[in-house]
Length: 223
Image (tube, rainbow, N blue to C red):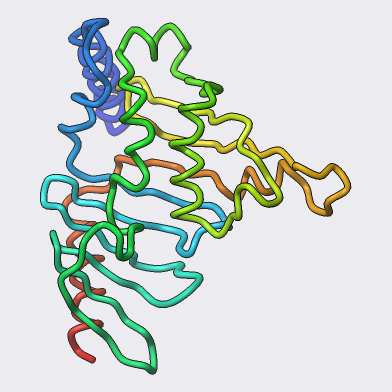
């Protein structure tokens, strides 16, 4: 009986996914589809100041719950940001997108948004968009410079960006392809590219987000 129930659930999810795909018209914009998303988790490579950021997109909230490499957890609720500095104390204040840009979803998504992709373009590319245009690469290069520890321009140049999408036309992976300016320079381009990767997940929900948000908010306000 349990196997029958599980099979029914799998088939139900499959039919739902197919139905969602059929509802999409070729001219529909990916940006419009993404605006309806409520929660997203972004996992980041080694070249970032943190490893995970959770977003409640409709509520304009964000939290960095764990895996912080430099500094300690922080949160954002609209224009209010709470930051812990460990033994140095905490601070809660009003801020804009230029302060702690990692707490703003646009920091990770604006370059993709500027591509203004349609459902047809994503389908025709087999859900794998490759960016090579010089002007478009400048958008991603600026993002990488702002968000990561990479010093683009001195040692590396951005030769391309790959963006993978799921069957619902949502970005699930962004890979920055780096190229050395000096071939005698130590280090591997492939490793640095992997360390710049961003992964997007939509499996988190309200309960998980709120639990992580309350934990970090309480920790910061307690101090």
